[in-house]
Length: 379
Image (cartoon, rainbow, N blue to C red; front, side, top):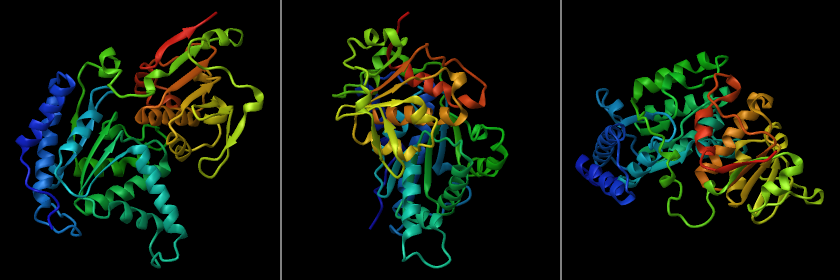
């Protein structure tokens, strides 16, 4: 049985043209260049797969292996996710897989735990290798959206995963806000990740999607036509305690009462919430972001599609490096799931560019929070 049928570059390009026209997009030259590269990757991968049985890894020739792997990077809001989503949709390929980067790591950690607890794990094999084998089983092409890494432990796992993927000739397409050389931006750990950066640059084409327009900031791109609550239905509210009730007026929200506090357990560890109803989840910033909560907790909670409200958001200078990373992960996850987020702080949030290592990914977070309703500032 073949993994897919023959597919030409022109067919892929026609798919992009049709989808852009249907959405009313005027593609810029950077996006058009990326589409050309994605079309080449798609046609080459699909056509290569037709000659192989489903359980045989594709072993690309050395002259061709980089041409089936593409690393798209650029500033926020340049359409990278739309590009790879349409690329994925256009592929006539069995065994294609797509993950948002947070979901990828959740799945990798989950399968590693399963392997650790499994009595059938072969002697001498690590749980990580078993998890990677499971993730890559029958995979012909993998799309990873929002590729980034800040934690050195995750960096080690990622290195092992990429080595396994490239050794099997599985095609890889990623998007990122970072060029490969800027991954693991914390100077304390960057050198540890340098061999993995070299691996990426050896095996992947690297292309920039760096036009001058942040399309997320355009009002016409904020509704999307989807029914139901959306990320952009949330707000950023700056108000002192005495003015908060007035600031919340018209939002449909009201501050929780003390008796509404509950303890959630989305995964293993308890997570305090100020309120948890079918429609809303309320958290205190410090309890949510300055304690050892994890990405797996947030991903488990977003499955319930409730409006998140985070109160007592401090100034950026008061947020620790780990607290900012957790906050960034929450914004990313809620944005990707298109779930409303409301932030409440006494002073306006400062999301101006910063070189501080405690404010990584600030341009992406600022772009996403910029889609929330205008801040309500009271004095």
